[in-house]
Amino acid sequence: MSSGNLTGKAAIVTGGAQGIGGATALRLAAAGARVLIVDVDAQAAAANAQTIAQAGGMAACMIGDVSQVETAKAMVARAVGEFGRLDILVQNAYGGGRDRAGSAVDVDPRAWREGMDLLVGALVLGAKHAVPAMIESGPPPGYDPGPWQGDGLRHGDPPPREVGRIVNISSVHGILQAPRSLVYETGKAAVIGLTRQMAVDFGPQGITVTAIAPGHIVTERMEEMWRQNGDEAGFHLFELHYPVRRTGVPGDIAGAVAFLCSPEAAFITGVVLPVDGGLSVQLQENVIMDLKDYILEHPQLKTHVDRRPTARR
Ligand SMILES: NC(=O)c1ccc[n+]([C@@H]2O[C@H](COP(=O)([O-])OP(=O)(O)OC[C@H]3O[C@@H](n4cnc5c(N)ncnc54)[C@H](O)[C@@H]3O)[C@@H](O)[C@H]2O)c1
Image 1 (cartoon, rainbow, N blue to C red):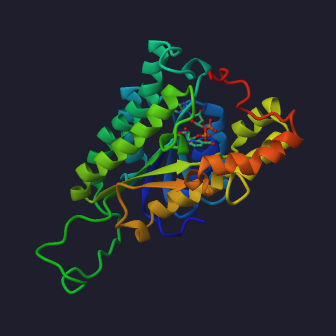
Image 2 (cartoon, helix red, strand yellow):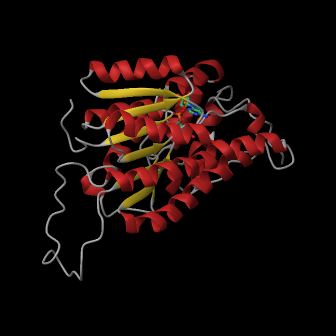
């Protein structure tokens, strides 16, 4: 499991204990990267590191809240101390809170600040400390930049390449707005903005910065939410909503992250890649009309979002 297209590279995955981050840590390790899982959940982080080790990969854990300056600094120092270098940063950690739901009228200023600190501030802190470490590390051992002069039209010296990859996890909620979700939607839109900005700022140093916008991904926690608040008919409504007629699994996102960290993605930066089964390209008014009959046939259906603050017409 330890030889792949990321062999020799070192990665940090925030929120890498479970869910999307958990699958991503596993996937990057399967491609040969050494992975530092940074998470607030010590038990789940240790369990995922063990899963990775059992599969033949290499992973370490660090417990910390990524919205805190000390954590961002310490995680980069730990990765460099443990693996001797840093090549990849996947900024994925998020833990929501009911007090963060609602409109600008409903949301408490403290909940807004805490939400922004984690959704947006943590990603700035992560990059602030990871970028200098990536530059210091340089390209991975054995990196062959390939031909420069003669490989198409070229001028002068080659710029730095393959120095680092940052992948930020946004959401379809960063592209489309759900009602009464000010904190999450604004934060995830800002992730796209900061990704574009960082791509421009760090491209000259050989670092690409991309974002992924997942659709509905049924993680361990999401499955539990569905179990508590949804039912079979409600879940099927979600599936029908997607052009590919299924919701996502953590591996769908992990695969996209691994691609964006691979040599094949060296010329991709500043983009947001929706990994959403086509959800974000549909015209909603047609979808609603297509699903109307299904909803009328299942008037009691329940989804995991039913307990949100009620709609205002
Ligand atoms: N699951 C989805 O449907 C979905 C859809 C779109 C985007 N996303 C985004 O994907 C990312 C991962 O979501 P998920 O569904 O896998 O979540 P999850 O709850 O399954 O996992 C999140 C992990 O982050 C950790 N975490 C939470 N707060 C932290 C903090 N302050 N510092 C360090 N670690 C922290 C948690 O302990 C957990 O291990 C999030 O950014 C989320 O917004 C998820």
